[in-house]
Amino acid sequence: MHFMHSLRQAWKDHDSLVCVGLDPEPAKFPAHLRDAPDAVFEFCTAIVDATAGLVCAFKPQIAHFAALRAEDALERLIAHIHDRHPDVPVILDAKRGDIGSTAQHYASEAFERYRADAVTLNPYLGRDSIQPFLDRADKGVILLCRTSNPGGADFQALDCGGQPLYLHVAETIARDWNANGNCALVTGATWPEELGKVRAMVGDMPLLVPGIGAQGGDVEAVLRHGRRADGKGLLISSSRAILYAGKDGDFAAAARRAATELRDSVNRYRHA
Image (cartoon, rainbow, N blue to C red; front, side):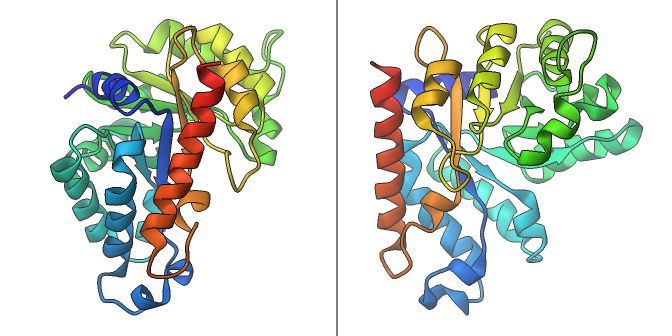
């Protein structure tokens, strides 16, 4: 199914703009899982099964799996989501960006090996580095624009012909790269006014918004500046605040409560 269609359906059917980031850190797992031979898969699938009805997407972060030599667990996790929760799209958070045949291989990695529905990418190398992803009209292409980290301004805020570079990126992607309607942008919750400038620049394009929860982003400000006229258009991502809401045998139930609280908080502002 087309990523954008799946996303729109999940927004509607789950009444949710919440995206759960899947960033496994075994040191934070409940004690009974830390020494389990398949701990990463067991932990992540428990979170997925507990929260799937509350979210619009899941976003596994590839580095967390690769560092643990758990790429096989990542493949099985995405397959599990597709099998058990086929209405929830999967975004592979990989932030790839390279040229020529390397870009082709990265596209194959995301969409053939891992069977992700969308992937995060770095546009710094220009359009040819993104073209193999853009050509996959059924897949989501989610490009870094104004990131949530403090150092993002080192380059993203530089003047570029009278506007900051991040707005030039947003304008170029919306105007020139989105012919298949499969692009979205990463815009951090920690910069809500700048998020609003991106929204004004790109119209109804979806925005993936990290930085809520552990990074301190404000839900009300994100909704005020970033929502579309229909109250949708955002994927508000939270990882640690949901994944590690509980530390014992009830960790999945605690994650469900945290996801419910975030969804309800978002909905209070977007339906106001």
